[in-house]
Amino acid sequence: MDICEKIAYIKGLAEGLGLDEATKEGKILAAIIDLLGDITEEICDIEDGCDELMEQIDAVDEDLSALEEVIYDDDDCECDCDDCDCDCDDEVYEIECPACNDIIYLDAEMLAEEGMTCPNCGTELEFDFDDCDCGCDCCDCEKEDEE
Image: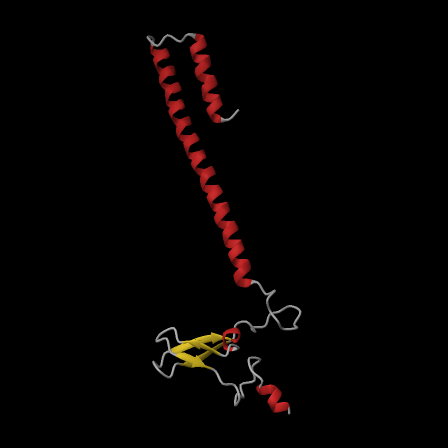
């Protein structure tokens, strides 16, 4: 039996005994049983609230785990290393917009595109890697150096 069932059982016993609430002892026992009933209701409400909070915490934990998998997932790494402790996905390049002089940060994937629009002023930016000597995988500068 849980605590709610136990107090209901005690109340049933007290009613079955036919306690005389006119006597001093009967008044005290009835007051104690009522107090126990109130305490039990509060405890049951707290338990219900805790159960609800635990369900919400579990849902948040599941969402956080899914988010961690997306953020820290190394399966998308295109390098050939086995334990993939490299920072190949973390390389960030910065370029300056010639129109507004805003610094734009790009990763290798964004840099591999032919061009883009400046997020600050909307100017069309084009990337020319013909004379690139950066050593990155985003252009053909290494291939040209080998020829």
